[in-house]
Image 1 (cartoon, rainbow, N blue to C red):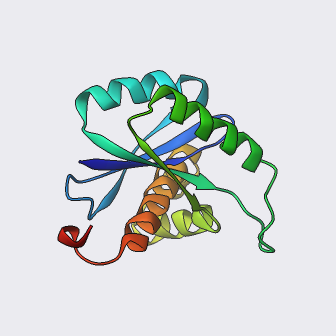
Image 2 (image 1 turned 90 degrees about the vertical axis):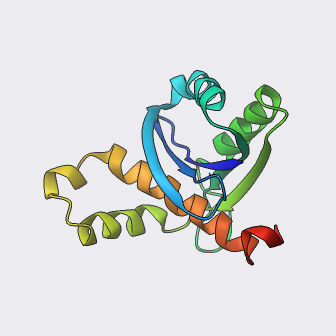
Length: 142
């Protein structure tokens, strides 16, 4: 079974997915947020997903950011729409900056880095990676 990661935003959401052993997180694509639920329905028909990892925005002092309330409401929608999926929230602090750095390190041209959708899907992969790291141990230990 796979897990997906979501870097939820008001306009667009980055999506990432793991391999079936939930060892590697890879950017998948960026979806317009209003189209996200139908997109996920189609994705779940193709991929066996058991966990949805949703980023949770926090300020440095640990307080909720402006978008955290919207993320919480979206998590509730996800749980209602997909009751068979486990919903996990993961702190997404610094993921956009780390995603940009990954694109630079990866040799993406400046014009490719300017496409915000690229940052969103790499951020989703980072969020998903944080979740995988939190599980610890090998796949057999999970």
